[in-house]
Length: 136
Image (spheres, rainbow, N blue to C red):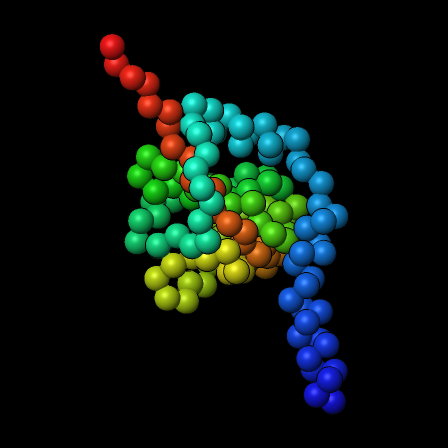
């Protein structure tokens, strides 16, 4: 019985990685994300974001969730479930502690019916900052 529980736990941990391997990029979502990131450069990915610094979030259909913190954008491409992202959904995030991290699950709710519409497992947060132009 104990071996079965361990096997089930290991299977549950590997499922998000398996699911993301089959997901194909959404061309429309990728184009929308590229437009949003125009004039910005990517920084080093981080595993967690402090919740006190988050201003808002934007869902990019089938692609990513973009979190705004001041003038910086953090792009999160979920490890699993990105295909179910819909810009008309509501993000239901249960935060344990003071940070949102790359192991957290975010539920998606239909805006009209308020019914559960899926979930995503977050990945790393990639920061994007505006390119600084030097004044001469």
